[in-house]
Length: 257
Length: 249
Image 1 (cartoon, chains in turn green, blue):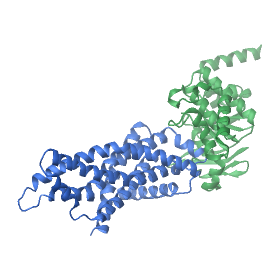
Image 2 (cartoon, helix red, strand yellow):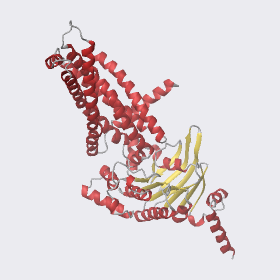
Image 3 (cartoon, chains in turn red, yellow):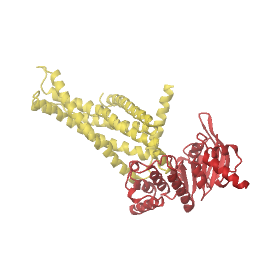
Image 4 (tube, one colour):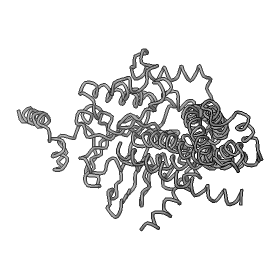
């Protein structure tokens, strides 16, 4: 479990995170949602230790990130996998080498075993073997995300972080990526934290949703009760699109009848 | 403000170098990267070093011959002056200034692009010391390759002078070869190589620094690349003065 206790983060006197406390549980897809500029990316970067927080605790199964030295932090990061918004694949390596990279750095497997593990991960994300020897620039955005997920899970991480996994993807591919993240989380019993503002993702895979507004945790719950949260700001966020408004109206109509 | 920025830059550069020269996560990968960088930074510079050296050697011979035409000066003076200019300054300092443009901008833009596309963050999240993994092999590879480039530049420059002198009939073959052998001091080659080692370190480390701390978009990578070349060049000239003062005066 990842536990956040009273997390504060300030940039040049501007407090971006104002005492956030929450928990991210294992085997669940934990979503951080909120409008642009609400502080969700800062929160995620603080959770993974890329930003140093001023106050509070971030506990990874009891291990507090702000108390760690760089060596301990590096050891903890070997248990993490991350999918970046822009995939962040190494553009000087082909797809297969990208996935093999963490194995090359941190495993004592033979070359054959590393290759087999990398191919297995790529198969898990349903990537066609014909793409294995292509460079990231030669494959589509959706495929790049799949490769990035395969690389993130190559070392069997305990914690998986995804920063806006659907940005720049069409709805169909987005759905595929969402389901993939959810399936991997359940299958490998990982603690997955997804940073998103895509309502389709929220409804599809939101086991535990944390809604951030102006640096505060405004609401926490699951996709099952998000439509009836009773929170004004969350309603404004959720029903910003016409589609969700109509779903809500239909839902209310059914309930009233 | 300027002084504060200056000390801030020195501090950040020192901290980066501390990270760069820490123990690699996996030596095997580091050696592999060093070999790749030797090819990327060193071997790929052979062409430009060859072309510039041969032309500068040739032009220097013509200029020296034209400007030292005096019955009181022996004909060997042309070869002698060409050799010492190449050995003392051109093949180390001027060549490294040129390489600061080629290699420095290459390193700054490569690392800068990796920074803005979050590839460096991806390395960090994997638990890899990104500064060590990316920068250390570049510094080692270029420091290893620079003596070869410098010695080749000396040889090619002298050959260029010989070709233009003899084939355009402005100096005899005997006088030129006699000139380049006249009062030869092997220490000058050593001095030149020592200088080039320092310059190689400056080019790679300063350019890596600007690339590593690039922030923003493509425009900022361009700025980082420009800063890398300008500041490397200034530091090369400054260190040239200091080393010359220590080793020759």
